Image 1: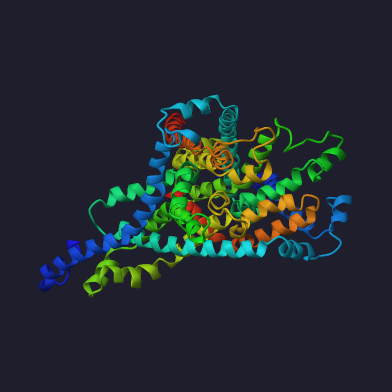
Image 2: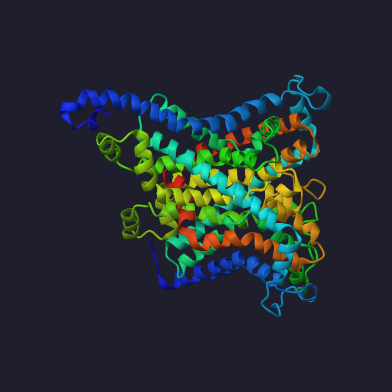
Length: 275
Length: 304
């Protein structure tokens, strides 16, 4: 490919402009969150007078975000644990074991990828209501597990299929049971994939609003993202406070992105290059 | 399994024990996941198809044939939702081409390409709720963007309150927030490109455009196809949070999308059967996207 010096700099200008356009809304919000209401009304763009977390703290204290955060942590942790357990078990079986109907059952799992939640939400809501799981943490955990399991199985299967069959066979000849192989060999070997899939699933669950709105009906069971949607009405005349609340809700995700960027992009592209 | 048995004197015993143990284990490992997928995805899909043929309210559970679908066809709000899906299709080439071109630049290793990749991908990890809230501030009528326009001597635009503008604002924000996803997929595709093909093109004196057209695009046809399908599916099923936060379907129903229509009809309107029918329309739309684009790309790459 041609890589003449001047051409590279010519494209670098729009690239930089676009990077600015990507990051600026976030920086703007951060700046606004440090302003007083008066400062914001007078000038939208001026730099905040001081670096302060006062708005963030007030938004946190006055709008129940703490409780919503606990709800989000509980359902995200529960769903991710269940997803990793079920996904790694099935992924191991689909990639390393031979049994009747293996190919067919794997296709069922992949086919479920094409069923978005929107398509099944009405019957899902009804069944959850009939089983008493509506408006419960466990109901939401189940909903997330059902939603993200096909994707998890797909990634774990393609990861485990790269492990040579001899590894499993050698362990078996040494007297290990198949379930023992799963526990002692496949789980430790799968850690990098489990980390990547786990972080992705955590983001999916944490960021979700549709499923959570549907399942969690009462105010005290709200997850954080649903709580954020309510902030707008609450702080419609105090944009800096609103910005503070939005920022609090975004912080955990920003932190995760800074630490685990590689795992996240590896995870989302794992499906693409396999075709 | 036979090839694994290496200890000759124990062969038959070991194999017999293996076969049965191994099958039971496979069953134990696969069953929980299958129960979840069949119970929480496939059974609800079948139930939904069935609900869509029954009535709401007084006719709850009564078979009504296709009348829900007739109601949908005549409902101006649902028609707007479908028209907006048409707009999404029109926006699709942009939503694929922009990250495609950017990925090409990054592949050419423009200065700072690692930094750009990290920045471009960042909005992808944020919830649509957070994105929508941020743009609620930026695009509000007395907000910063209009302040800039006014200072530049232009009339302010009611980005989220004008029924002709709002849907474009929402689509634009969605593309802004998700192009990083297509970008990293393209880059993963680029990393699989055969370097010798690129070198050969250069030896033959091909310029950048020719190289892209005759080498990169045909070689990456599967990646491009994957990006088309995932981007469109993202548009059909990933915009609920934005619509909910930015416009709540308004003004005057102008920013409805099928997923938002389903949610409102199910909940606020309390018409689950009608919502089920809309769900089935969305499902068929998704399947068509998958099939049609696979074909289109196949044809396009043959001509290229």
